[in-house]
Length: 240
Image (tube, rainbow, N blue to C red):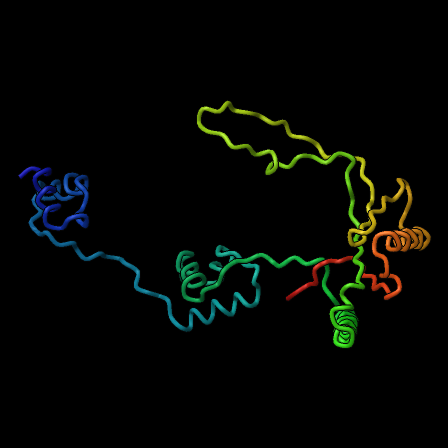
């Protein structure tokens, strides 16, 4: 029988699980022409038995916990009697370790910082328990940000709906504006632009608070009589 007939019969019997025609033609037909009569696979010689043991996994885990910034190559150098692929299998499959980046935060809080935050939050909770939702209406959040003189259009905002027949459009890369100004925003009541060349100090801060007072008198009448709670830097708290 030809190799094509052999492959057709094998496909009819085994369906999609059958070997490819190239394997039939190039491997098995050639071997039978050379005098082979056995249709079973020969036992592989020189195969390495499984070397992964509980003691080996414990040793690898110990090395990992000593230095968690290891690489598979450097870790495999600690175990010269096993291959790099075996070390990789132990780390990723048997021990189920994954390589992840650190979680970046603004700063690491000390014990003193945590105690102060706890005291402030406890005071806020006590006030809310005593005053209820009326306390929330007294809060004025304040934050600062830099505003460029020229605001560039983002790549997302410049996207357009097109089809296959639409002409291709190009957009040149724009550079950020070198000139910028510090802006102080206070809860949609006041937007204060700091004059160029000035530095935020006690005098500038007090001047901003006077502007806030006048803005509250004009836009939020009755808020001053209730008492204003000023929330500085309305940023998300660090969580761990």
